Image 1 (cartoon, helix red, strand yellow):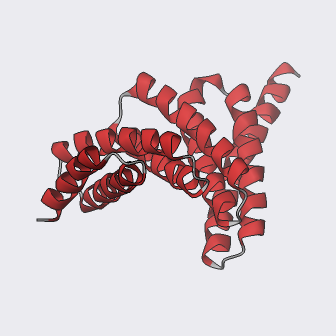
Image 2 (tube, helix red, strand yellow):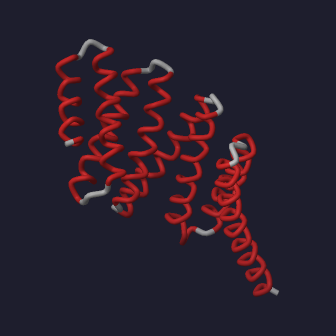
Length: 194
């Protein structure tokens, strides 16, 4: 009887993993169709499943946390699109925390790139809310990460993200009367465009 209980538990875990994967696919489809409220609800369901799985399958904790971090980044993006900025910031805060934990444990550059992406998205929201100092901090951190990753290899998307980050930080510095610092960021962006 004990064996039967373990088998049922394993099947339930497998079904939850599969359902979470299906929900992610469904959310991407809904986003393409611009059905953002439905996509958000779908991602919230996936978030709940990943949280349950992290508790239920400790030997897969890192893999599941990475999936949860990606789901939270998606939630942040949809919330921002819907004008639910505080919810977006909360989701980005949690995804940022998870990506940092994963980077510390796994030291993977793809995770650093995802962290930089989440930082940029959060910085954009903070900037729109006129929280310039906080926004600048996030742009600067994203810039440092993207510079390091760009130096390791030539990926055009990283270069474009880096240019965007540099120009965004420069704009905030200019707005705050820090022209000399802003010129340094503009110069770095210009050198990447050549």
